[in-house]
Structures are given as C-alpha cells and as structure tokens.
Length: 582
Image 1 (cartoon, rainbow, N blue to C red):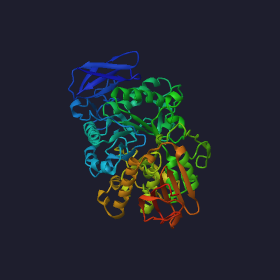
Image 2: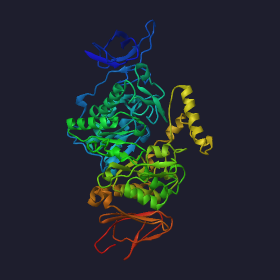
Image 3: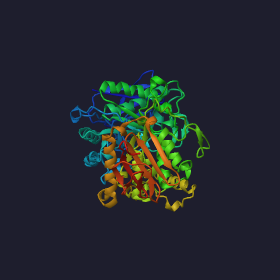
C-alpha cells in the first residue's frame, strides 16, 4: 500500500489521480488530505483541486514530488532511493571549515551536462586537491537548461541532469573518492514556470524580493510552509547523503518570529548529523555582513556553519583588476584589501557608498574563526551577473589570476573555486534559460537587456538568455586545461591547495594571528601566516618586497636577497622564513 498526503487548506475538495484513475481523499482539521491505496512503485500521480464538474480536470504535481520525469507541469512519479544503490556506508563525512570547495553547474561543467558526466571528471578534482563539490541548484525547474534558481518543485531532481538515481550515483562516487557534496538550495522565492503551490495553500507572503513574491515564513499559516522548507533541506542530506547545503540569499528570508527559520534549520540539521553520525554543514549566502548568522545558537546566533563573504571577493578582485564601478566603489585600494583580509568584513558598521548608508557589523575575531567565512575570487554570481558573463580570465593576465588565487587560497578563510577558474577558462558563464512559455521567454530576454541598458550597456551586446547558443557558449572547454599558461595556472592552484593541506601555519583559523603588510604606491602586499609569508605584487612593474625566505611556490621568478624579495609585475611568492629571514 502507498500513502499519499498533501497539505492543501485552500481547496474544498482534493482528489488523487494515480495512473489516470481518480480517488477521493480525506481531509483533516490541519488542512492535510490523505489517501492510502495500492500503487506501482513508479506510479504517476497528481492532485485535482476542486473542479467538481470538469470532465477532464487539471492534474497538478505533488508539492513534495519525489520525481518529475516529464517536467514541472506534468504528473509526479513515486520514487524512493534504493538502499542497495548506496555504497558509502564507510564515508565518515567532513566539516567544510577550512576546506576547499569547488562550485560547479552540472549543465555546463561538461559537454554532456549530466550527473554521470560529472562522475567522469571526479578524478581530475581529486588530483586538483579540492575537498567538496558544490552543485548549483539541481531541483526541478521549468525548461531543459538554466541556472536552477527558478525551481518550483524543490523536492524533485532536475531530470535533464539524470534525475534522482543519477544524483545518487554522483554522490556515491564523490564519497568513494573522499569528496564531500554540497547542494545549493533556494528557499527565498519560487520560479515563474510551474509554480502551482499557491493553489494548494498560503505558500507566499504579502512581501516581495528582487526575484518575485516572498515565501510565507512568518505570516498566518506559516508553520506548514516552514516545515515544507526544513523537510526539503533535510531530505537532501538524509535521502541523498549530501554533506550540507549552500542556502541562497538568506537575507531575503524575512522572518519576524522569535525563532528565525535559519536557527530552526540549524538545530534540526545538527540533530540529523547526530543521528547519521557524520558532520553536516549549512553555508549561507548573505550580503548583510551580520556575524550573528555564523554565531553558535547557544551564544545567541543563528548557527550557520559558514557564509559566503562577498567583501573578500570585492576586495581581491577590485585591487587586482582595478575595477571600481558599482559595488566595487569602496574597494580597489590595498588598504581596503588588507583591512578585509584582517577583519573578515570591510563594511562593519561603516558607510557603504553603493548602498548610501551604514552597512554591516564588526566580526568578533577572537571568538569566530575565519573558517566560518568563505573566500573566493569567482562565483557563478560574480561572472553570470555581469552584463556579458565574462570571466576575469578574459580581462586579466595569467599573473593577475595567479595573484588572486594566492590571496584567496593563502588566506585563513575556507576557500571556494568556481569551475574552470583554476586553469583560467576562456569560456564565459552567461545567464541562460529555456522557458517553454513564449511570453515568459520574451519577458526574460527583454528584462535582461533593459536591466543592463540602464547601466550604460548597448542592449545588442547583452546575450539573449533564451538563445541556446548562450547556454552552449557557457560550457567549459576541457581541451585547454593542459595548454600553455592554462596548465601553468592549474599547477599553481594545485600547489596552493597542497600548501593549505600540508602547512600547519596555513590551517590557523584565527585572524588575530594574521599580519598584513602593504605598500599602496608600489602595489605589494604580504600576508604573514606563521613561518610563511604570501608576498604578492599587484602592480605591473617589478617591486622589491621587504620579506625573505625559501621559495615554496611562486608565479614568476622571484629573486630573494638578503633584505627582500624582488617580484616581477603581477606575480607572487610563498616564502618559508627562517629565524634569520625577515
């Protein structure tokens, strides 16, 4: 017997369609409808809401659908993970703190764009030295390809990637190779195509955010919506063995209740981790610069394991590239870079010219380790949300890319790479979608062009998200990995990651032990990490940096003298100092 249940307080009558046969459901006082009947393990099913006198009623997918083999507008399918498919019983799990995370988009990471194709590249990632694979959203969304942030059936796995069984194979394969897996989960809004949830119940609030109507987590009848979110999060970690989640734009989760939904999720994640006997991590994306997000619950915080830190990205990118427009306006100097590296946040109760107000709150570096913040020089956002999706590798020299890597990977923070960054991939990562609805497709394309035209771009230069070529252009070109400076840069990334793993001084998570020296005019900066010094020349001219030691790794040909090290333009050196060296 199969049990079917759905929370649907809005309709007066709910019928269950199983393989084309309609069955009545019983309603309880809490708004749940239930039915129990014989059904095939892979039966197709859905729900008919009201439509009492309709001869061919519309069948809607299950809000908690385990599988959508025919897309987000079609019937759901019963699915349970096969216990015998799992081979990772010995996987002990690992915390993300201090790790190296590799963010990838399944559809563009390989030419095939599937989970199984990712498996074929796992040995490459192991050899690179990363610890975790972070998958951009894999929940079910409209169309065949897209970024995944417009999901509408959060419990189901996007079928063009291979569906749930292929995701099981990928996570198994990662664990067999010692790689953890993080899944990007979006709980702050729903996509525009296939969102039937409001017909079942009050899933949406009266508020809104930049991506649409907000989710009801604090208005009337919010309890079941909160449960919907938390159960979905736990499902990825329990049923699919994920080692944690990246939570998209949590600042858009406006919660006025006494117990914030993130605190609630943190507590339930810890309980699940105890039950499973392995660590589980929650990484929040937030632009609030609020350390309470990563403060433990028993100290009044929300208990997130870590958070993305865009200030670190902005400080590194702006100082190296010279870009100072938009939200880079307050950055660009070595003073800003040094301050951000030392304090975690640049804006910490200080004025933000981009926001035209004070922003952020100071981080208590004596109690919160740096490993609770993620440092990166690239993310899907920082490429794909540029007008033409251009990577830094399309604008900067390989030496500048190497300096950026040294600053991020040599820092005390948990590190993250974006796919292809490590070899300076020449492929853009553009914003792409495949909405099947003509009006929605047109609105998406026109909105994208209008948005950037308002910032001075020629609308004709903005790629059409609906053009299949925009998607195809964004796929990585693996043929260039070993070629020339691409291969050199990848070896630099490997070397930096190995140093992080093997040098105890680089594992020190306390910012109070980090010293940063710099010269604004000569454009050099040095991070002192115990006996190691990461010396970087961000300028185009050679600079004599007052630090010496044995060269452990370098881009360029540093010349170490008695009183300093000469670094060529756009280069770095990791120096292991002796008691006699400065």
